[in-house]
Image 1 (tube, rainbow, N blue to C red):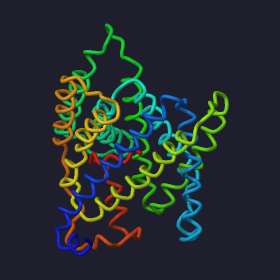
Image 2 (cartoon, rainbow, N blue to C red):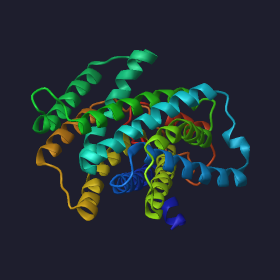
Image 3 (cartoon, helix red, strand yellow):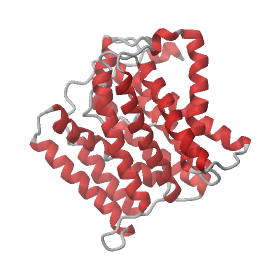
Length: 321
């Protein structure tokens, strides 16, 4: 199997890694939606953070503490707050809507990231970016219209959009932090921030959780780690412009999980709006992606190439989990 993959081009391996990452990311949503029927959202995040930290501590016991050393503790704190605020919004939205609907709204995240990079990093604002943003907003509006009551936006939709914004903001932190931080530290420290914030909040409304609830929360954490790992593998070996379309396999994966676990399907208008958002993201300029020819897919080190790949903001690779 490993030898077969090694014979494939870097871009093809990147597409396969990204597709696998999207299927894993949808499993996070399935776990969160299943457990949300019995457990408050804040408690889900607290349980997930606790179990994820336990897993990380075990891993640190094998790899050593060098991988989690940091020069920017306050940046990790800010990113952790944004990251878990995004997750809170997404998990809340999953209570109100199907997985495929939530993922359709989250596609706007790539456009928000590009616009925030223009504001905070002074990146060039081109006509293509403006056109893509406007088209993306039209796509979101098309998805919202059937559920709007006058000018009111349902809480689930609002939560999904706020979640996309929070994740876009934490992406900008990641863009700067990867210059000095390891991938492992960037996954580890937000979990501690989550424990500090969400455990006290969850204790206020804590509900008795069954073994199944803990297992599902742990499953969400496990699949989240798996998703992050596979996304990083994808951006190491392939051009960002090549793997970007693979991020949209989240929608068919979401539909399949909705049908299998919840007997649900999104309204047809969701496909129209999501299609406009996807088209808008594809209008962005994805030049300058990672070249695959000189990269060994088996290398797990936090090398410069991986950092450069991770720092690109003009790509819709979904790492929200």
